[in-house]
Structure formats: structure tokens, C-alpha cells
Length: 108
Image 1 (cartoon, helix red, strand yellow):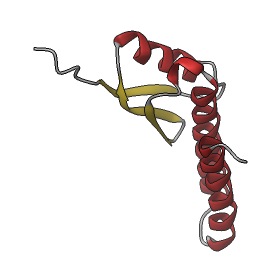
Image 2 (cartoon, helix red, strand yellow):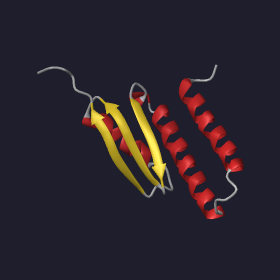
Image 3 (tube, rainbow, N blue to C red):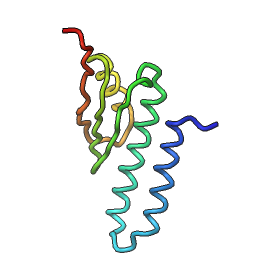
Image 4 (cartoon, rainbow, N blue to C red):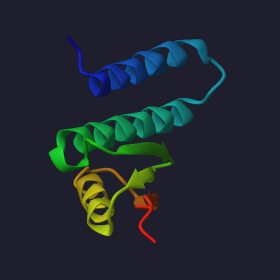
């Protein structure tokens, strides 16, 4: 059985292949950039899924022009730092934008 995270990665790759065949007016450079962005997104997402301490969190990954944006909720600053550290290991990323938030515990 395919893990849910792996299924999403495979779905993203299939979507990329499908869309690349549908877009004939884009320049080759534009398509290369889009492919590179999807590739980076996939690699970062997989790296986050492969990190056991980050699996419980719903961390979203989006890439535009080589800039990776991480968003979603984590439990602590340490979790946030770990996600950024994992993303930094991926080569080809120009920079990382952190839009993650620390989930409120409800203890007031």
C-alpha cells in the first residue's frame, strides 16, 4: 500500500507530466523553471516526511522561482527550526520563506 505522503508526491509528478504536455505556448525556459520548482517542492516534501519528528505536522511546501515557502502548524520553535534545517539540505533552493506557525496549546 502506498503511504499517503508518497501518494501525494506521485500525484504531483503525474500532474506535472500532464500539464507539461498541455502547455505549448510556454517558453522552454519557463517550463524548465516550473519543472525545477515542482522538483524542489517534491524533494522538500519527501524530506519532511522522512523526518520522523516532523511527520505529525501538516507542513505545506510551495516553490516559486527557486524560493521554497514552508507553511502550516507545528508545536514548537524547535519543530519549525527542524523543518527549515531539513529543507536547507536540498540543493538548488535559492532561499526559504518561513510561514509556519506554532500551534496554540490552549493553556492560558
